[in-house]
Image (tube, rainbow, N blue to C red; front, side):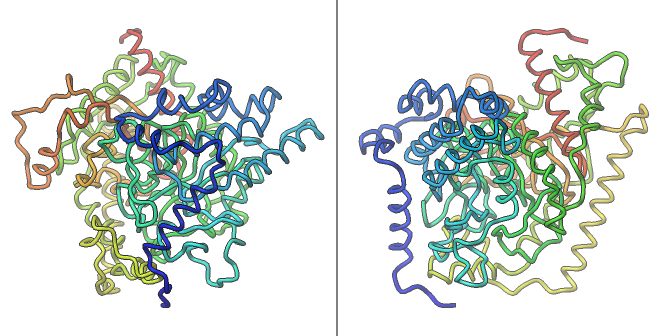
Length: 575
């Protein structure tokens, strides 16, 4: 492949300048203000809001469902909403380094058009009318780069075959969002390769956690998590092949949904090694609210994406499943006496790496809230998850990193230091080994499913969903994310997952357990990385896991769990 004549460092530097130049002068911070931000531990809430007007704060602190309702009622215009989120995103990027692409002018033109349509027809274009939606830098938008964090794709769109198609291609889900009335305005940062639980690349550098800047924002949809924690977005699109919407959701104190891969369209989106589809990456959502996740799932499925993408299963949004699970609990999360309570499993540990104290406390908080609300909770001890981790990781590396090096060679950029060892160029996996691993994966899936079904043996009721860690730590210290199996295992089964924020690490409560004896070297490495002072304030999120194509179910169960936790916080009824 041809290597560009200018150095990759020069191209990356020029791209950074170009992105900043797309921020209107009135929204730019001084060097002194940026320096002040770097001194802060937490740049969310009051810190970022000092750069916003009261009317802008009142808009960006609303969640997605409220925003679309306010626009529909005529209380807010699409231009007002878009301007507020564009300005907040601009400031978020300057203090949080979370954007790859800015197209605010395009967004404001779109918002003005939506307002004109609303004025002329007295109706909205669709259920997302006037709602700004941020997107991970894998999804193509006309007129905008898609670098996916690779210097070699600056000025173009990763994955296109014909250079003449640059800036003309549009991902299917992008088209669907626009048809529903959404406003697209920025693309968020991600790590080089996508296959990393932090967010770092050679174009913009590192994106840190805005709630505790000693920590990572997670990855690979890390920029989405940061932007939403800073309220520069209430709803965004990401992807997940090993935890990439769940990890940033948990690490940034927001919500996320990882559907089964064939539920939403990946057509015409950039990806790493797209030919590996034994365990597919899935399009997923991140939001500041559970309502935002449901709004986007319900809206996108209303477009019937399966008619345009043959990989999508023809499965409309199932209101009856939402109603079925809503009927099993009261609005405060307590179980209804006339129906079966929920039955949840809880995975305290994967038996390889013990979670840090803040995670264990978070699990206890959810378990106690659900038990006090009258629901059943049982210990979850599935087939050893280390087996699934081994199989899944083998598929992620099956091409010997050839696709990754093809992208690197376009500019001559190197792997970032964190990934140098993992993605050294090597021979691809042998076909017979690939097929054998496929069979091993199927056997593990079947064993896990058998275990899930066996939970009905004791009381005649099968587990509805499982509470488990997203990671063995709160938002992680950069460079110390040693164990990604808690999320990767779920990708092997292609299960449906919602992540909910639960608590924050607290140095006074989450003290080191000096009696714990690690069971192996990896466990020891993770355990010794826990520092209560550094982790203090780090977000703790947990994943609620259901089976394949159970997105409506897991979103509804998440609502019940949140309600039960809120009741417990208020000292509500106990059973």
